[in-house]
Structure formats: structure tokens, C-alpha cells
Image (cartoon, rainbow, N blue to C red):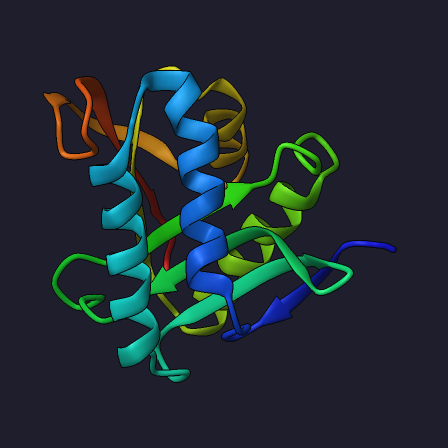
Length: 164
């Protein structure tokens, strides 16, 4: 069955998104339990305080199973900008264009909300994701060594600014 984009909470999504992140990042950079728990906790908190007037949450579904995700957290938009979070696709769908569709959906939401600044944190070495970010107008604005995700990486902040 084809992949579809679904807006809003899906039962089991928190665990599935945490699993997708853990299964991708553990072999890649060694992130383990602290990272998976941080993803699950953060997404659970976001879902509990979700406000459809300011936040966005989308899933790529195939046969009812979450194969990708992305979120826009607008809770601190006035101070920091909108925060793009939990962007991931499954190994089975990576390269299919679903990541592009998820990111375009999130950026369309930001435009509709008149969010002039959107940012995300990632780390060096994720070439495909960086390509998508740059394609959608994001630019690298800051780098630093960090361990917030359970392993030492070169953290990167990307930001997209657009006139309102």
C-alpha cells in the first residue's frame, strides 16, 4: 500500500518514532538508551501539550504503520522561532521521497502560521537530511561539540528565516 501523510496523533506513534530514531542512530553513531528515552519523553510531552493552533505533527503511514514523522513545536515561536523536531523515516522508506513530503508539509504549515523563523538541531554527517534542509531554505547558523544525545557529535543548528 502507498505511503500517506497523516496529520495529528496516531495510537502507538510515540513508541514507533522512538524506535525509528533508536534503530537508525544506534548503528550510525552509537546512541543508546539515553537517546531513545529522550526522544520518547520529548515526543510524549509534546503530544500532551499539543495545540493545533500553533503546533504541527505529521506521520508517514503505510498500512497503518508509522514509517516517518516530523513535528513543528510552536510553543516558543515568539522568543526562539518554531522548532522542527522528530524528523525521521524508516529504513524501508528512506529514499522514496517521503522525507521530502514530510518536510514540505511542515514548511507549508509554518508559512500558513506566518512563522518567520524555523530552526532545528541535528549533527554533522547526515548528508541526505542536510540536503533536504538546505533545499527548503535552511542554513547552518551554529556548530558546537556536544553530548546531549548520548554520544559525542558535532551538533549543528540550522535556521530558516522568511519574511512574514
